[in-house]
Image (tube, rainbow, N blue to C red):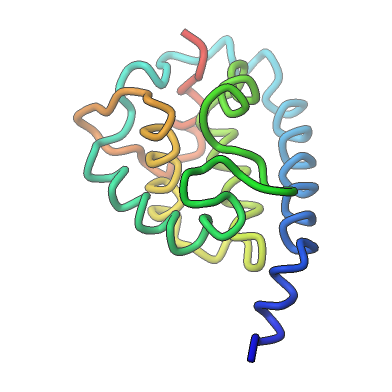
Amino acid sequence: MMSTWKAWRLDGRACGRAIVGAWLVAIVAAAWGGSAGSAQTKRTVFDGVYTDAQAERGKAAYDKDCAFCHLEDLTGQGFAPGLVEDIFKHRWEDGTVGELYAIVKATMPQDKPESLSEATYADIVAYVLKANKYPAGQEELKPDPEALKMVAFKK
């Protein structure tokens, strides 16, 4: 027999609420960060801002806490957006890793936002970066919102 929680999760309401929440956070982050934040950006995701080991930890966390809605291959379904390829790159081309980290932390997992450790959220973001073929580097992505705001997606 399916648990009540599982049935609730399967009907899409939880994923739908999470997506609405994510868009609200994105709008607030864009208004808050604005162009002033991008003027201070010093690095890009092309500079290798995570390690392969961190991305591997992130994959394990993603598989456990994210794949149900965003699918194992990160392509998304229903209300859960894809986290790879053009849809991801178009969404984040003018953003920062700090904005991505803040949205992931504030809205995911959809049934219990902000329930993971800050390091786990950073690991998941590292995995998403790796899945989008941004290069790995020598230092791990730190769960420091101020530092992450300094890492842009655009070269």
